[in-house]
Amino acid sequence: MQDFAKAVRATTEELRGLFPATPLQWNPHLSEKFQAEIWLKREDLTPVRSYKLRGAFNAMRKMRVRDPGQQHFVCASAGNHAQGMAYACRHFGVRGTIFMPVTTPQQKIDKTRTFGGASVTIELTGDYFDQTLAAAQAFCRAEGAHFLAPFDDPDVIEGQASVAAEILEQLGRAPDMVVLPVGGGGLASGVTRLLREEAPEVQFRFVEPLGGASLKAALEQGGPVKLNKVNSFVDGAAVAKLGDLTWRHLDWVRPAQVHLAPEDRVCITMLEMLNVEGIVLEPAGALSVDALPELASEIRGKMVVCVTSGGNFDFERLPEVKERAQRHAGLKKYFILRMPQRPGALREFLSMLGPEDDISRFEYLKKSARNFGSVLIGIETKKAENFAMFTGRMDAADFAYRDITHDEALAEFLI
Image 1 (cartoon, rainbow, N blue to C red):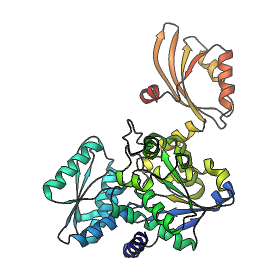
Image 2: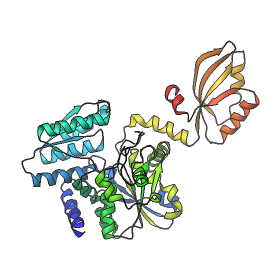
Image 3: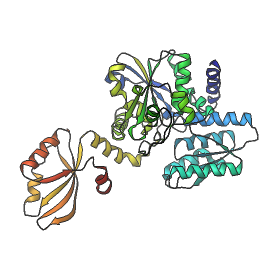
Image 4: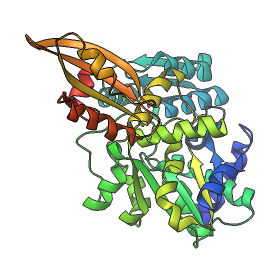
């Protein structure tokens, strides 16, 4: 048991040659809000803006000890793991081939290339990640290279456990609770294993995106299962299947310890952290903070560490994040309105808007009958309860409408 802790501390020392320990920051805003002592472990402040560098570095370091002749590493990733491996390849002066889906945003491709420099080659292949992964593994076998897994690898897990080693050193004691995001389970496996050995009194809570709850599914089924559908918005944690190795590290978790974060609610948390704290978090990086309202009664008066796992956020996505946050908070809705085709109808409709209501979108879709036309209308307001008054006025005036705000099929085509 102590061998793992010893290895993790050796890894942590090795990491100091790559970057300093990430800050563990007391957050007064969250602490006051939840009447607790809230600390943020800022993994969004590593050189690649995520904790993934730790595992990639450690796996590469150990492989080079076991097989000094191995100079070629391969991975499949469209995000943080790719950037972590690229950085490690440049550090060790080894060759890296990174397979990414053709659909990967150019910003992520460029960042990966920047971190890896001449050490890294990027191969774009496959429309979906499964196709990319298959291509990477086939290439790896043909080239005799080493495949660097994103989470289901003991050396990767050991590397991620350095987060826990730093927390204990920086706090000088064990916290009452650690809140962890979960994707494939590498970070959660490493952090919990070290803390359960060295500070068994620590409680754990785990947060998954609602549309990618692979740990929850594994706990319900008694082992890893592949989700039929994954919502990719929280891309850093939207994993279809928990790892087999990470499952063996996490099979002790109780379902009640796992919290599911709706993707749109995560957007509210991201905006709050940006606007109030000036902290840029990617969706997966905000998961641990997003769960705090659900944990409010449990954490009052306690010391809690939330691991903010990444900050690789493309600001071109900010309008989407704001939109999703408003819709989740009930501050923005979309309607299809059956507008009478007569003089004064539009003026009559506009008179139904309250003083805090704003039209954000107005688009004629088609004439559905000689005397009526269909209109897509988006409305923003300052208080969610204003919509009840607005729809009440439409009902009283016999305006026919349909709220499509949460209709996924229609929203996908019309909004």
